[in-house]
Length: 400
Image 1 (cartoon, rainbow, N blue to C red):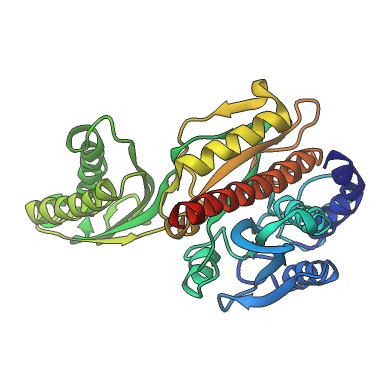
Image 2 (tube, rainbow, N blue to C red):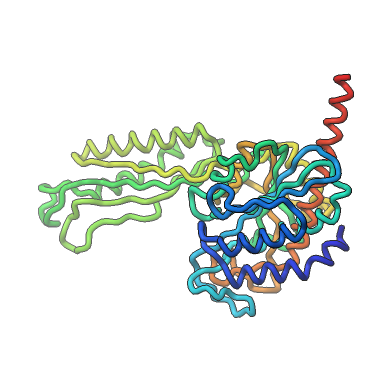
């Protein structure tokens, strides 16, 4: 397989750089989707476009024999960031760039499609390639594709993220909780404004906000099991526009990160009770608007172990990292709610180059990491199908 990867690598680098030069924002990935569909059709795959009512693309590769189906997913969208790199392939679109590696994900999965299409005589079953739009902006593209039934009948699903904070040559994952549910909240406080020198005639929303900011932290520190991870962060407070005027209103904006569904629901309930209680105690009205983002990414045990075993073969034992759960969100979680599978991180950082971190104007990847990504996903797909086919045959024998 390594020879096949070396053969396809220059083409994949070219695709990745083209995508980097022509990024498209979430829900606008029309040209990216067209490029993906074109390459999949050239490989003889069964291609569908506009999957999920968005710019989703799928390609189905059928092996020589019928059997189980494994899905591999890549996201395609870019970010509203100005590309500040001095590079021949820097973005040509003002204010838009691939600052999170999705161009690399798309190119890598196209490489896997080409490799496996040349190995279809060895495949017992089907490989479904999922190219997903709109990962960066909720509600996201994954939920729309799932609702359309894209993973109905799929036996396992796998995905990766190129990760700049880890060096090329590393692969990180874990079973269970991997990435947090990422929610946003806004608290609107309606007080009574007036002269700053006559506060007793006012209901000061800023003072109320100050109490709320402090008390919100007690939810995690005093009302949540300390063995369960949760974060409530206030990130913005908006109020007033003068030195000597107490404003009528104040807004508190922030985020909540959790891994457990019950804790997530409990936090929403406790935040609402706290807003109502503190608001009433000051004679003000407090309204909580809670926006549920992506669910937590929860890897399934057996698929994770498969990824880990393949990773050892690809980068060696020393390159495989048992990572801790992290707070960023990822809508791959919707796929994992429907189908057993696993998500992992492939290092794409290079200490000898300044590549910039994720969502940074200087972000870039070490393109050698795409070789690792291709070998990992292609091998995982093959071994998954082999194992599922073997399990199916053993089950059939037991039933005879």
